[in-house]
Length: 73
Image (tube, rainbow, N blue to C red; front, side):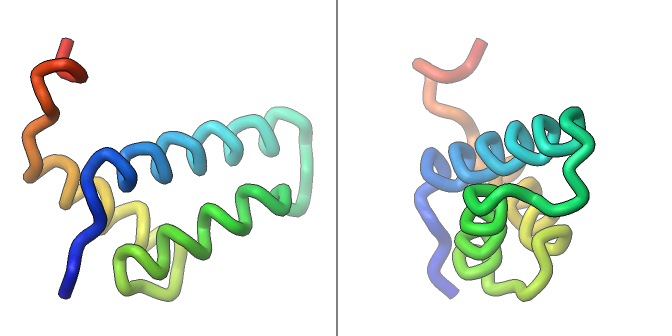
């Protein structure tokens, strides 16, 4: 299976988590359209059908991939 570029995957995870937190803070019962789009893209990128599984897979892949020196701090 092909894996997405780690930088792209990191951005997807970060954006999805930020939007999910914002939606939760607003008390939204439904995720925003952007959060749904990100969830779909994460699922496609990781070959899963559930966003929780997609996030788990993405985190495992990212943990196994060292961050570039410019991003590590």
